[in-house]
Image (tube, rainbow, N blue to C red):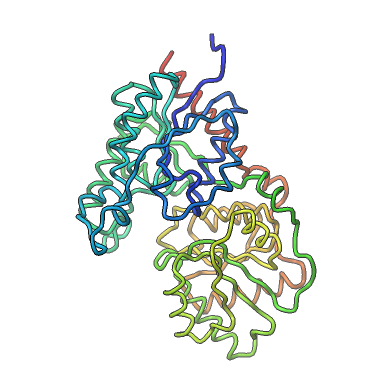
Length: 424
């Protein structure tokens, strides 16, 4: 008979005080909410020294029931490079491969001290999976591999992911080890589930589980706003988060903005696009100059998460960018966008999971990112609907299903299943 909460050892690179990135919010939310579901988290994470950008604010959100152990991890690009160069072998499967050396002994000590019932690890820092794989082999505990983003993508033979052959082979090996040793593989989108089924045809279907990203209601309580404070002269369209050169290339949108301004449909006096925390400001600044739209588009720096939520809540509209090569992914910000209940313009591929998610929530203000003419069409329609207060919004019932509390409940159910299989 179970006399107390069960324990799960969580191996995660993405964890406070690392600043930026949706992976931090996913792991942090699980660590906060799992105790409510009868599971005590034991977090194994790198020391802050591993992180180039740090923010201590989110540490305060971690519940008292979470036990955290941090071990040394060196970033090959920052700590082991000479004149900016380092041996490629030090960055396989990622730049933090040295973390394995300290995390495995620490993880074994945690297993002996706390006797967890399961192991959980999360990608896209693949070293976390290698640590969990080693701990699973040594302990025999059931292991859940949280894939988040796909490790491999061979859908386009001319542009495989990862593109480097050696890294691609390493990722393929890790994926095969996950398939052989894990009790369950978690993906965040239906497309990622299907991709795993195609690549791992021998894998039993029940070992693949869908636990999407979500929003954290507590974060919105801290934001303290519930919509724009008043009508502004310029329509503010906001994209909050990284703009990847391949996966979210905004050039068709910039071309559309230039065309609409030439046609008299837009002006800097009535419209402003803010790209917040893009991670690629220098590249984007060059594109803004190339297309001549620097007066219509503002590049804004990274800010704390609560401030980012405040900005989303206060915007006239929220922009989502996602190219067709990411059809099996849904940006984590989409769930926060839904919770904000602000008009959403999605420039993506109509066949992708992002578009499907929005349509499922009743939102049809969607254009094709690959086409500048369709970007222009979709933007004009969106602006008309938003200014008239007729842009579609997700229902409160649909939004409630997207919370991180709901996702934590799903993870707890999966932990119950895999731990029961072990003891049955």
